[in-house]
Length: 370
Image (cartoon, rainbow, N blue to C red; front, side, top):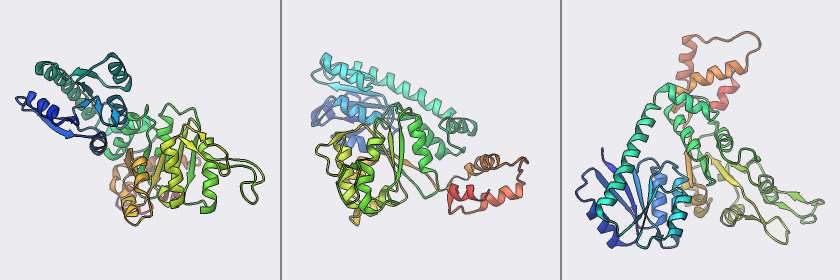
């Protein structure tokens, strides 16, 4: 097989040297990123594509250990090897703490570099074989059930694997998909399989709160901040401290609040209305939408900078009609949950009707018909 190696280095001479050292390795194909931002974009697009990531420790504006953390939040199985022209013990320690696999002096021989990269290519092969063995219906069902979801489709199994892969991460997640596909269930599964599972999970529908109240609802207010504010209110972000906040229908959030949310994501603080000082919070943000946010950005209804802050770990949920393998397991689940003493059995003709049904309301409508 052809191994894709992501080389992240801003020095053209070092890039050329590394490529030349691997020139005789015909099964190695380099993809180059000269900035941390570009590397994040590439890994976000294809988190399981790269056999090895070779990462320059001294990138402008961001050290290698910081970049490693960002990349591993999208795929904690990535084989990241740090390269440095000036290796130090501190840099090596920081790198390993961040989750990188190895640390190589750029001045090391080509033979040594090739040997190390080869070893991680073999490790990548082993991982691919494991994932391939998990792609049968039985294994897909197991991994889906492991995170508390219902189904056996490939797309749902990939969502389940992502939930498991990011369990040690606190990066923001953006869940996208049509209404009724179970975006909140996925958000709860992310929370339950994270290190924050024993902390609060707070869900809020950004489209259901009047524009004049959403600031107070999210961030709180001091007593007397406005008419009828007779007591101090604790906002949802503070309630969710050390836990997870789920911002459903994020595409409906008013532009003025988008600015406030962006600041919270950047600074890790909230500003309750009329508060004298900001309050620091540690909250994992999971957002969801059924809107086309790219179009909303073009029409100035959604901030582009907020979109990129939210879309660190993207998850797409397909419509039910696009993953019909999940229909039969869902039928079994809903019949069991709605049993009233007599067990319901579905004839093949009934199941065929369900499989042919367009399911415009997705899973939510499916539950309503039982």
